[in-house]
Length: 61
Image 1: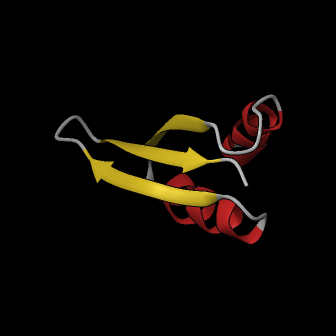
Image 2 (image 1 turned 90 degrees about the vertical axis):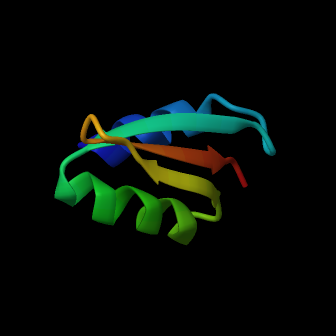
Image 3 (image 1 turned 30 degrees about the horizontal axis):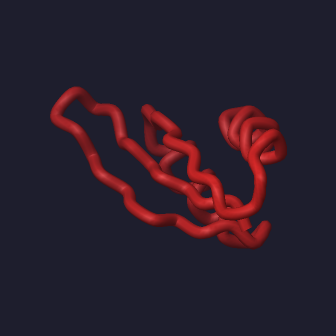
C-alpha cells in the first residue's frame, strides 16, 4: 500500500522533480526503493532516523 501512495505522488510530478517519502517498517523499506527503481525513478538518498523513520528521496524518471 505504501508504494501505491508513493506512485500516485510521483505521477503528479514532472520528470526530474523530487519527492521525499517517509517510511516506517521493514516491508516498505524493502519494497518502495526497489519498485521505484524498477519503474524508472532514481533513489537519490535513503537515511534512517533515530525515530525509526527512513527518509527516502526519489527523483521522478
